[in-house]
Image 1 (cartoon, rainbow, N blue to C red):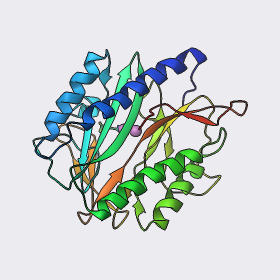
Image 2: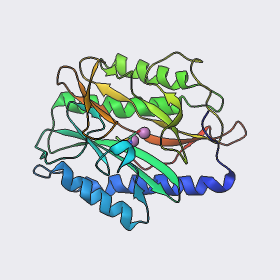
Image 3: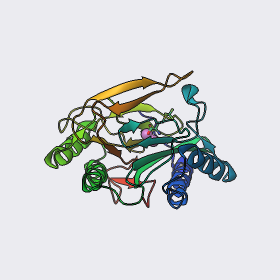
Image 4: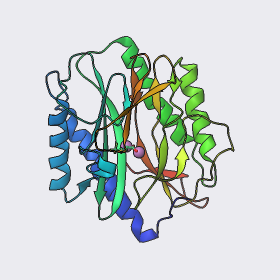
Length: 257
Ligand code: MF3
Ligand code: CO
Ligand code: CO
């Protein structure tokens, strides 16, 4: 089960999440044709450390970079390299900060210049699917409630949620229980524990839910592509689950994304 936060820990968790959200705002202006993924990684790294925090991916299970950058057919965990962004690309930047021992995790898919209508539709679907998943959160509800909402929305739009990878508990640990799937049935899965945090981070594929796994040298982290080279999009928020006596069932800690 996910760790629950003591009341004094909630502002600390909020602080780390807000820094991660600020990184996405900061980096947006640099996302232009001609910029390399490794340049964006360095800009994010320097922004995070200058705010007295650490980029969680760096050296995590041997991961070599500070953020994940996943371009077009890359589903997630892209390790930023010399690849240069070009007009028409979609690019997910996934930022996780550690500040005062708490992890804040958020990602957004950006457009590089003008993109195709399909790229816009898929990216919009991933964003709305994340919103639908979040809106299904209730204290003592289940991970299946979230997955059901994501799957229902994205399949109705004609797209395919990835099944093998998903959200997770988070707090003083990067990847905690429960697994938060992008598919499922209402009332199934694990209980959403009041005063714990989870991420909701659906990855939505253009043509099929299937994924191809690749190794990262000297790391146990894998990265993933769509099987046919078609597009994949993703958004991610970190969410605090509140309790039945709270005004709202949850708080999105990584707003404003
Ligand atoms: N931020 C990713 C997530 O949403 C995890 C990245 S782990 C890394 O869970 F090693 F790939 F960086
Ligand atoms: Co993330
Ligand atoms: Co995450």
